[in-house]
Image (cartoon, rainbow, N blue to C red; front, top):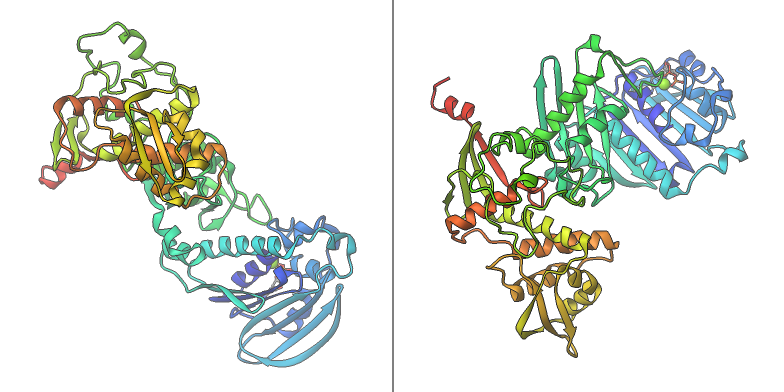
Length: 551
Ligand code: ADP
Ligand code: MG
């Protein structure tokens, strides 16, 4: 319902829209605009087109779904509520129309500024069956927030305020960018973490902001899509954007997406749905491909995660194999099985968990370490820089997740069990996650009080310092709330990987660099670390040549 009223205000050319909601809208909803307003006769007429038969459920009125036909919203709302329309064509003389249950009660002249205020109260007072469908104030309020958020994203130029039970909840000044508006709707931290999408191919322009892979699934998933400036729902486009995340997030996790798609006017029919919530593309395939590529580029900041293996790394087909060991046949077959998620097992194992840093069996280009922080190498498309810590973190994370999934425990018995004295919070964090630590290969006993006796540890690489890793991991998970077991696995694997990984500043031997390169090449998305930060930065020859003025 709020959507229809909001749309009416936009249709009237409003620049400022103020919404006041009482009790999640169950008491009243008031929406004021500074649009064109209505004459006395128009105001009366606007309520007179009864169309109660078109309202099927309460959700049609209150929730997200819109009316099936145009020209009925006000009349339909009016038929099941007390409704007041205050409107004026210009500052000064205006009209107040009061109605209830679809009948006009009175029409009085009033003084008001140009614009319109619609007030709906006692919704479904005369329709007890529908009243039952009204959800609790909280969920109705959340639905309203969603609708207003969505509308505000489509029309960033309009100033929008929203109050609930007299408290200002949302204040959105007219914004110049999507990020600015999102900061207003969902907060600056949320908006600041999103990655920018901006791609133009032919007449198709895809822009917007999307969630970092590492953030996906951590909070409510939000999707906003506009096509040629209209907020629409389109599963095909959303799917295309989601497929850009393939292999960066677990299967089933859905990323938050805010996308504006602009296509040539003759490519699209936005009027197929009377409420304009859906679009029909003449040929959707190429548009979906542009969307997918645009999002993928935003995630990897270059071509893609999925095609990464083909573009950045020497392709398996062309990479000469040095000193082929016995298992090279299985390792280097032409088309590796597609990997859908972090948690799928690889068909072939390039490295065993015990010895992840295996001898490279594919061609490794000459590698150079810069500032003891980055590895650099060249390939056919340009120069690539790898953040050694992020890269190693990624490698270890996937390795730990495989360990957990397979139930192997690559533990190393310590010659001398290590005692660890913990604070109460750390001890508690350990108890909560004891099972996962064990699955990761730690063998730990309580030793009275807050002391742990560590008998065995995973040994992911020779530089691994188990004591430090354990301490830092426990310290960083103390505040964690209880999560599902899968979330705890991921969280702990990610934290242990972070703490166990080589750091910026560690000098690497040529052999270690090669091993890292090979291990990273075999991860599902080498372009990102587990926090979603770039692991790899690529400078293309194109860019380099442009910088040198060769193009
Ligand atoms: P529709 O918007 O599909 O025409 P509605 O029932 O939503 O049907 O609105 C009926 C009419 O009332 C609109 O066509 C418009 O002329 C007028 N109207 C409704 N809301 C406003 C508003 N906020 N400002 C100006 N006119 C409005
Ligand atoms: Mg309307």
